[in-house]
Length: 277
Image (cartoon, rainbow, N blue to C red; front, side, top):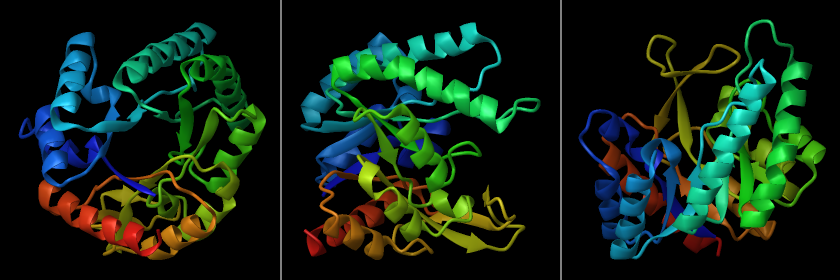
């Protein structure tokens, strides 16, 4: 398996203008990380794209995934088509970055729209998009996120409906807890479809302290990998036994300072990859 780090791990610092793209890539280089996950929210235009390409070359880094924040639950068909075209443009950017994967979402459930209607829009949109991803030779990987694709069964249902090797699963090990699903069981449920993994840990906290709320009302905070309630070692062991040799992309969302928490998470993940190689 290959260790990757998501730029989302630096979101707290980036949101306060305390870090930028160069800072993130420099940090990864210093940590001897070879693969990075970039997000469209941090590379919004051609100027930033060119900067990213130059910095990737400077620091000898490879892009594991270029991740986007799409939403196909749009009431107007023209808005859904616009969203598809937007992702096609992002696939063009991903090609320039040399990415092999693109993390995608399903969409956000809105008032007045049924689950079945939303699901059909999602399926139709991805069916339109997949041929373009295949043309670009980039695998779209669906993250378990939100009410429409938060559970492994929902992710699996969408993948099987779209039925393409260019539409696969991106299990987020922490997010399963927010759907009240045991992470190891969820990963096992997606075994045949996993093409990318977000490696993230959460810890349950008192209800007045939590940043994230599960469907059950439980509260969670992110934490350094290996210090929370996600059975990280068991998951890596299972992935290894299953023959998975893709990316484990660290998505640190803990309360500890971003650089320190991400660095600790890199050490932990590296030790697991070494143990189960």
